[in-house]
Amino acid sequence: MFTIIRKKALNNDVTLMEIEAPDISRKAKPGQFIIYRIDEQGERIPLTIADTNPETGTVTIIFQQVGASTKMLAALSEGDSILDFVGPLGSPSHLEGIERACIIGGGVGCAIAYPQAKELHRRGAAVDVIVGFRSKELVILEDEFREVCDNFYITTDDGSYGEKGFVTDRLKALLDAGNVYDEVIAIGPVPMMKFVSKLTKEYDVKTTVSLNPIMIDGTGMCGGCRVTVGGEVKFACVDGPEFDGHQVDFDELMHRNSFYQEQERGHACRLTGGMANG
Image (tube, rainbow, N blue to C red):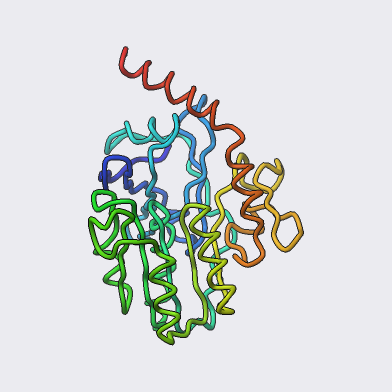
């Protein structure tokens, strides 16, 4: 069993938890993920590791309540335990040789982008960060990002905070102003990563994205997380989750990610009804 040491609501839908998992905390690197299962009947849900503290033996996860399993996890309290917490899984981020980077996070994807910014800053790289949200009340990790970057830009779709517009608007302005990056790392909703990659391809800037396909076992055996990259089938759990954004078939990924939306909504509604009645 793995104990919840700390729990914090970042906004109405996004929750931060620190889980006691000393072995994972010692080994995990930016870009890797865990798979949790609340109990014997629970689903296996992958979540990227947002941070680690080897001294306290904790692993930080940040998740959005979008389905039954994440709603069940969010309902737990500090001191509660979950059955399975497996990791670190996936290949770590390849950050060697990057002297100047632009890290782009969209929505809850900022939780995945933060470790890259933190590690690059620790290595002495120059780091620009662009984060995007629909509105001010959804903003997360602003203070944390400001501590690990040289320039910080925040955009909102409705203009309620920061700059009105999308992360691609700010990125284009920076590129047009002559900023040169060894690499752009974009993590967030699939459409956001698609359009960031489309933009950076025009400017010939290397771009890495972190993909979130449907995943079950996390070891490459089930094939559920297959994605097409450069015309070849890859498994996000072992070949990724990070890939060359200019080579990813984003349209196929979006189509595959929508396969079970009806079942997910039905399960979440049944859970909500059960919790309300119980």
